[in-house]
Structure formats: C-alpha cells, structure tokens
Image 1 (spheres, rainbow, N blue to C red):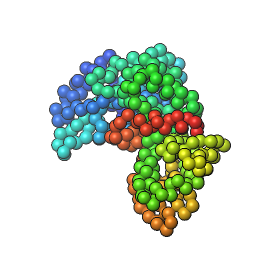
Image 2: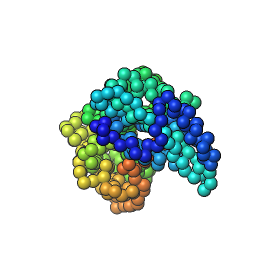
Image 3: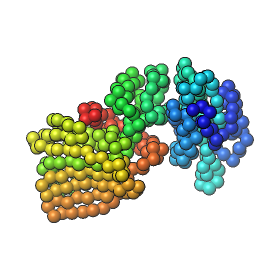
Image 4: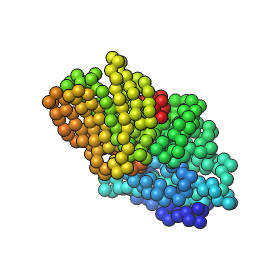
Length: 349
C-alpha cells in the first residue's frame, strides 16, 4: 500500500520539526491573505490513500468554517516506521477582496504507531481553539483515552462499521471517561435530519395529530449500506412517539403505543434507492409520509387523512459526508436528541 499512496495536492513538503516555522513563512509571504481559525479540525484515517480526497473536502469545508486543518493518514502495514508532512492553505475571497485562508498540515505516518498518532495531534494543535476530530471508518485500538479526552467534538459514521454494536460500546465508554465535554456526532444520524424535520412538521397539522393515535404501521425504506441510519430514524420515531418495543424479528418490529395500540414497523432495503427513500406512518384513512428519489436534492412530503390531502417538497440531506459534517457544524449543539435516542437504537440494533 505504501508505494501507491498519492500525496499530489497536499502542498509543500516539510520536515516535522519545522512545521511551525514553515507555516509562519507561508503567511509572511502573502500579505493579501488573512489566516483565520475558529477551531482545530482533524481528519484521521487508516486508509492513507484517502489523504488527497480529505484535503479536497477540507478545501470545500473551509468556505464556511475557517480552521486549522490537520490531516493524518496512518499506514500501519508499512514495514518501516516514518513520518512525512506537508503544509498548504485553502483561501477564499471575502467580499471579493482579501482572501481568508485556513492552514492545513498533512501527515503520512507509516509503520507501528507507538503513540505517534497522539503525539502528532498534540504537537500541532492551536491550543486556544476547540478540537473537532473526524475519525473515518472503523474505530481501532488507537482510539484510546489519552486521545479522546482532549476532543471537543467527535465525528464518525456508524454505517462504515463492520460491528456497530461493539463500536458503539467504545463510544459509550469514551463518553463516560471524557465526561460531558466531548460531543458525539454520527453521520448516520445527521443523514436523517430533514426526514425528522419533515415528519415533525407534518404532524403539526391538527388533522394529522388527530389520526396519530390510530397509526398501525410504520414503513421505512433505505439502502442496505445505511442500516444504522435507518435504525436511528426508526428509534427516533419510537422515542418521540412514546411507543414500546415488544418484539423484533430481523427487520420487523412489534411495537405498542401508550394506549395499547399495536403497531408493526418494517424496514425494507432498496439497493437502487437513496440512502433513506421512504418513511411512512399509516392507520385507517390516514397516512403521513416523506419520500426521496435517488439523487434528488428534495424530499416529497405527503399527508392524506379523511380526504384532507396535501403534497409539497422540502430540502433533503446531502449524500456527501463532508457536506453532512458542514451542516452539523453550522447547527452546532450538543446532539442531546441523539443521546436520548441512542438506548432505543441499541435495542433495535
């Protein structure tokens, strides 16, 4: 793998010991640009050939979120240990005049870790700024206490995990050890943001509210790669509705409302569909649903109850992880709803 890793576009190669000096020279040589940082933003991957793609994502993200970006690619299978580094800046015009720039430091670490990930992170942070850490793909043994204790926000995508149950156990343990300081953000949860807004908005309709107690079925359609996204969305429906999970049989779930109404929920998988393509709640003469076609940037909202039918459209969540990260950073918050839904999700999982 090591010989095939592309570093084209990462910027100017520098020695690890001279990073600070070279960054200073970079800014001194460009009087037309302003160095801006609101946070430390770190992307870590053990698929080191993703470094260049991650640099491209940072370039897009810094249009709205100025930061000191640290990209770390770890090639743990390399036969010998080494560290390479590059620096660059991503600049965007402010009011058509002066450039506002975010600096980026990229690292390629090869061979055994021996604490090099943690040391690389600590040595290159802007200590006055919060640390947002995007851990890509599987959580490994390098996700350990001395690292996650310094994080302000941890971003991950549970849809990429081979064993979500085991990885969520690591996240839960990390939260307990890090305390309330570390905010956790699962992109699988972020993908359902506009679905949740849409369903909640439809049930603001008094006629829909009247039919809510009669709901008998919940149908959710999703791409097979988005299993945790689908389960998180279903867990949200159950939690917000005050329902109880009675029995689960693969992708079918028997539920009960507070009034004792039996509800059957099913998840259907569509390899040709959008990450989330349908959420429907239906009962006698009443159906509330949100739909999305693959590639469409909008959701279709539909409500039909007792002859009262309306259809309209609204925004959909992006399919691109970097855009999901950017939208979550714009909203901020501590993701308290995600934490409230998590126990129900783990039960479904």
